[in-house]
Image (cartoon, rainbow, N blue to C red; front, side, top):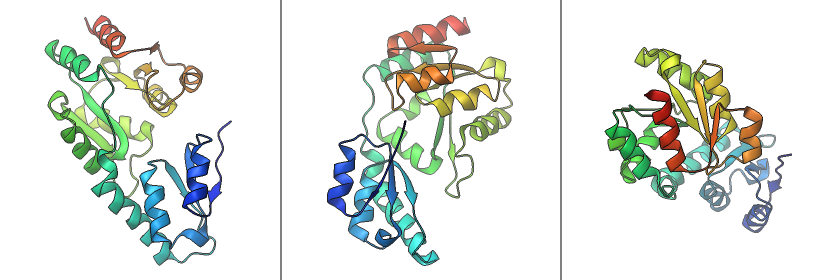
Length: 212
């Protein structure tokens, strides 16, 4: 069971982190508190904004705070999983074309891959639009298949969340679930990927076995 709760200040927001909440909820009374909103943005979690006591201008301002903080700092508060660059290099040497498929806005995602030196491995980078278009993985993968004019039978989707697996399956694409990302093993098992693997080395071997 996944759950979340509203935080009323920075202290309670940090307290909720001790329970590993995957989501953040901003109460409408907090929507104009700039310091609080910037702290929420630093958590890099899916965020729900309660708008009951808010005006449209307040909601727009909250989103602006989030994007400003994320664009300047949050984008790069990441690290590349150990073994991933080596795995990508092997796949590239074996002429495997690789594409980024993220629900993040592509304008942000491209900055992240460039910052961490991953752009050189990618043939194309797909992401959502700032207006919310293609945030759903089913829509995003469908868009990519159409844009590239590629048959689903020639594609493998690698993902760490159930949304990756579900979106690929709904587009008739083979799936590989990886257990070292944000999603739990239970979440991935429920989504039933075609393959579920434990490390980047196994990922490389699995992809090569499916493409040769």
